[in-house]
Image (cartoon, rainbow, N blue to C red; front, side):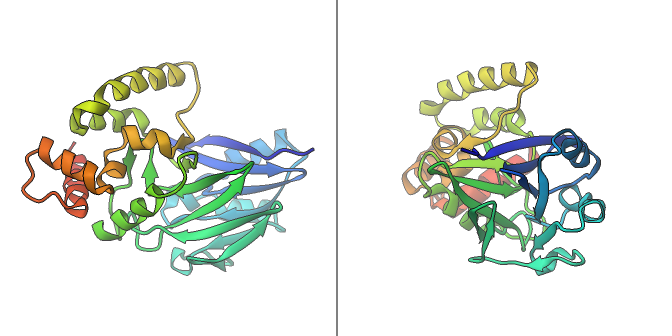
Length: 261
């Protein structure tokens, strides 16, 4: 039986390029650089890349596309029409891509950018979400061409998924985000955040990575996920003495605090 394998390729300063492999095929997500991906396939030459999926237009997610398409001409490119990539097959919210024997469901998860996409797929009985720069472990993306309302809606959409849903973000920002979380979180989550920070610090020191992360985990360490819940938003508002405790307002306040951190 051929199992699905998900590899994280390190690139640029702190990017992860995700590669999903099955049998003799592979799907690449957000190749900000090509050389590391080509090196991966040279070492693992049993796999042939059949598709590239793009979450958003920023160069650290698309910079390797042209070289990869030139190197693997049979590989198809999927992106939003606003991503500005030549030769891309246009996809948007609700589209389903049949790849590797799986259904990759396209979600619009705007906020970081106004045309940001995520790719949702069920593997081995649990959902895996390749979320680009929308959700990070213990954090969320900075707003560029999107809006706070869009980002809040996107994180809220993630927050109601099953607890074992795994998120594959595109950057190693976890320790910095945990530092922010420790300043913002309510008292009942502080001990877990401190323990988790030690765990991830050791993991990274040993050469590992902090991803993927489960929704169950994010509900404990990610104040942006917590702010999408009405009761938890109220607790965060009480802690920080906010006059308005509605989830969107609390979320927006947290995002502004993170911008200044």
